[in-house]
Length: 258
Image (tube, rainbow, N blue to C red; front, side, top):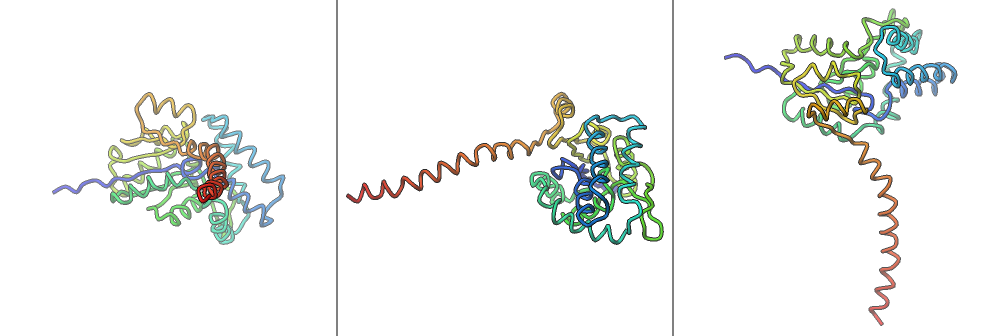
């Protein structure tokens, strides 16, 4: 009897699993530990923002961002960065996690489906996040290292856009997934190759372009940002009502006793 192909769920990381950029959190931790100057991190953050805001897919723009990401950790000891990454997770990544996304991932795990992170962020950081959350594994951009030190180069291409689709296809062959029965989640239209590479695409906190595509094609839309906005608006109002009620209750109590 032929074995049933395994199923998996693939999750983007930045703004899908966490609020913000993994590389930004990593850079912040490196700056605080004196790895480089404020000017260095400012240049990188600006390049990161430019790439994300323009969303350009041309090879020149991707290479510029890729080179910046590699130079970011070039010359630093692999073990040192690994230890620092654990602190970065505890200090910055963990508080920024979307609980709603984690709940979706846990549902897949409960259904005996593997959960993989697929991100342009460094593979080491992606694997650490996956390990801390109890996921199956992670695919990320691979920085080159020699003699225990990052060279500033990259092994293969930045895991972005079409490269994500290629990566999950290779993983599917290795682990026996039937991609037509698999799931993918992302916030960005740049991840359309990933979403279109599976049978069940979904969006989480989608950008405008991806939301339009999801509405057109009937893909599920999970937007956890709305809950935060409502909490910010309604939270103070509810607090005031509760406080007002606490002030009025003793007065009502005293009036009844008379």
